[in-house]
Image (cartoon, rainbow, N blue to C red; front, side, top):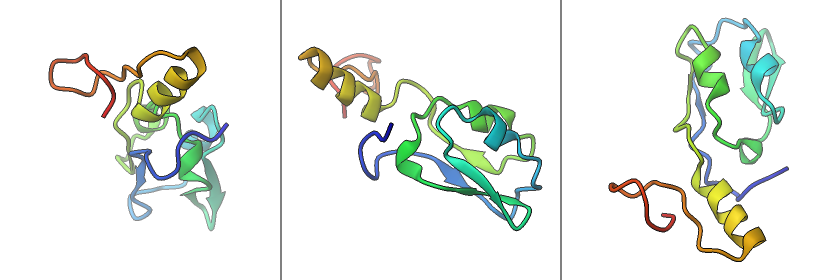
Length: 97
């Protein structure tokens, strides 16, 4: 499932990637693939910002602002008809970005 275009905070430093494949194994949405013995992002918009890739990358090649994520909050709001709540405001509550 794609979320919103160009909102995911996912970043991959290919120079730090050692090709261990952990990101490919742990990503629930298939955001990563291996190419030339290194990971690469297939489609950043598939990222739900769960943080599994960053937590499992021993080499610091992946960064993502893990959490509920604004994209998921907006989609949930649309589906439920409620105001999106992503917790990204300094108080930890409030509406989404």
